Image (tube, rainbow, N blue to C red; front, side, top):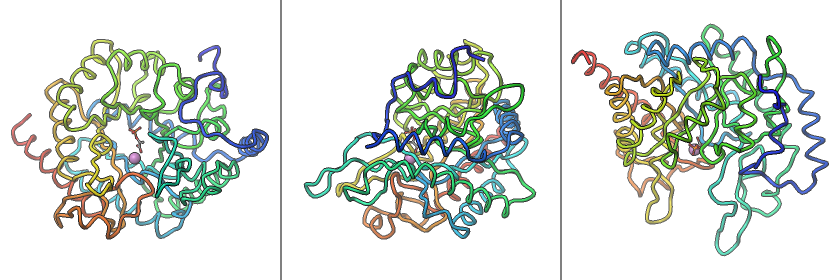
Length: 398
Ligand code: PEP
Ligand code: CO
């Protein structure tokens, strides 16, 4: 246990992506209330997930992580949650026959309410307002008041997460299901951080908090917070990352080299994956860091249409997944997981797929609060292509 660490030691570190609240006292009051709320997840399940992530790192399980880019408080309804669960469980079921060991379903759910933004400002028709930062912070509506950070949303976030988890437990009784979200809003995360077994600290807001690429500087508040909790941790790796940064980060977050502690989620983009991924794999091997690798083939492959709509093409997403899988194989490593933005709704946010969605279709049903998601058909098609690849590799005895 690091000696200088406390659940709030992060507050002395640089804090990228911080929301500026108009009244510090209101924020402090909300944080105090949040710190008296019940933990959202159980310690045994956090520990179980860590063991499963360790197995996936050895090629004896597979992590399937997926859900919305930005979860909305409005989606906290039984029908929405049921269909999101059905989709991920269906995908897990399709994958299972091709995987050694269990497929481990993890939702981007029950807490994926805070979003990092590339720009602090959004412009529409000559009006500039602060960006939407996720329901945990402000509202998506393009309106001056809606965009002011409101600390009452921290409590609403906890309530929505608790309700979502209750629906999940009612729906899934026999199987394990885990939750994850980006550990972006540290007031929220640290207020839900409590002592567990043997005096170790755990973030009880979710089983698997992850570190996003915009907050992963070695001296950031986010790294400081994550180093002291004993949950398994996801780390996104983008195209600007370097092997030196990765190794320094792993030394900070997993100095004991505990298997299952670290899930590395690469989102390099199809144009970078071939030259960058091997350098990260080799660095972890050289420095003996036991990590589990997952592929997020979504975030490195964004494109903008001529009319300014943010989208992704299923073929590009597939290419990054396919190359990532192959690169691991040729470097004595395993691809142990897949991370997707997807929804059971029949949205038209990503291009391609069997119905060959094109640019002109995007307007029909574009509902995402932020990044474009695969719809159900596209998500299932990606799994189908992946299982074809796994079958082909098995037959060639790779
Ligand atoms: C995300 O997963 O929605 C996200 C913002 O990811 P990244 O940090 O990889 O850009
Ligand atoms: Co996203």
